[in-house]
Image (cartoon, rainbow, N blue to C red; front, side):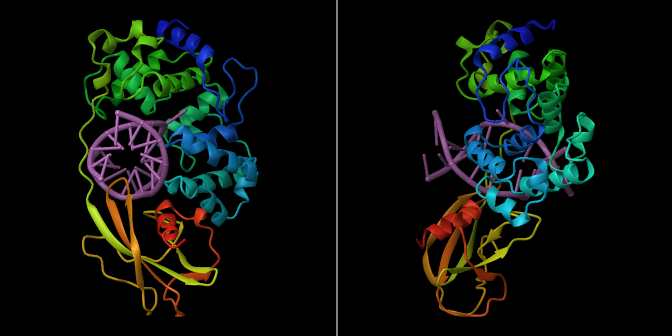
Length: 335
DNA sequence: CAGGCGTGGTA
DNA sequence: TTACCAAGCCT
């Protein structure tokens, strides 16, 4: 391992690696469980470690290996994912588990290309699993690595145009020895030292190698194009209750909150049309505000205890924790 | 390939 | 309260 930055990073990681439930300590002779690495990596896509920990514990307790997960009912997995967001991940997780269990004898492939072909596993996750679980010198580039490399090399080109340059620098740093620890070290550094705001350059093990540090520009990197403002949408959500049973429906597999159980709603737009699931006296009980990635939503919550024949959905018992957060908020207005 | 796709924490 | 962000993937 010639790259002095990689050496400094490895030495820092040996002393400061975070203790995480899916992780094997640096330098350990143990190999991590590919199933747990894969599960954690999918959960961690665009999601914080703090948010993932509880979900990871519940998933691994309920489904300790890929065969168990593959055999699970779709509804149980979607309910267990509720609240974590980006629900396509849960659908792809199950699809991936069934391919690995059904066609690969329960063993994850060990090459980046084969991993990349599985549902929900893209360029980042395939490289991360290959490096961490199988000790291959894959070039792992996530948001942390983009930030660390942008600063180390003082790359002024904004993302995403700078991605090829970042990848080349990351490849030049990637060692043949302990590539899994190297990948995790880059992410730990990005998460704890080389943070987006107020990076702790004073205690950074790579400070002497950092071009942005020398120029005083670390905080302003990586540069990114400004984001468009999120539009406002409105809608109606209908909570029909019969004793302990609530009217819910399964949302379409594709699209927003796809495949999740939900209360019936109107369309979401500037001027939504009321769309009660059956004729009744619907009483307003308040509003729910919720932010999505590309728009903000205000739902008027309506409820009834009246009998009626719904044109969609079914009445049944309901655990609000199995709903996406938006609908759990609406449910909470009535309890 | 730019946009769709969640949520909760933080400044 | 708003704005931005956090281990991306899919189409």
